Image 1 (cartoon, rainbow, N blue to C red):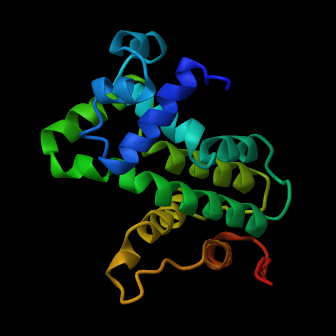
Image 2: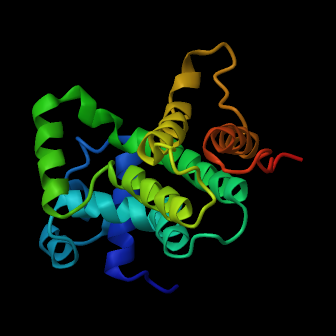
Length: 207
C-alpha cells in the first residue's frame, strides 16, 4: 500500500481535526500525531498553524479564489449572470465547509485576535474573496457590462454575505436544511444582476 507524502498526510489530518474539534483546539501537536509525523516535521512544510489553516482552505475546499482571479483577468467572457451564479455556488460551498472549521475561534476573543494578526502577516484573511469579487465586477464595469454607477464593493459584499449566511442561518429552522446550492446561487445571481447590469433584462440562469 502506497503511503501518502507527509505534506498530504498533514493537510488531511489538519482538515479532519479542524472539522471535528475546531480550529482553536486543533493544535500542531495533535495534527502531527494524527498525520503520523513529528511536530518538527510539520514545521518543515508549514510555518504556523495559521498557514496550515490557509492551505486547508485553498487546497481542500472549493476553489473560490482562483475562480475570482481568473474571471477578473478576463472580463467579458460568458454571461454576467452565469459567472455570478458559479461564483455564488462556489462561495456557498466554500462557506458551508469552512464555517465549522473557523467557528470555534469566535468563542475565544484573544485567540481570534492572534489568528487574525497572523493571517494578515501572511497576506490572507476572509476579506480577500470580497476584494476579489469587487475586482471582477470592476473589470466588468470597465468592459461595459456593469453599470457605471454600480457600487461594486457593496454588490460583492451582498453576494458573498448571503453565501456566508447560508452556512449557518438555516440550522435554526424546523427542517435544518439549507436551500439547495444550485437554485440558491442562480436566484442570488439573477437578483444581483438585476441591480447592476447594463442590460434591460438580465440573463436568468435558472432552468
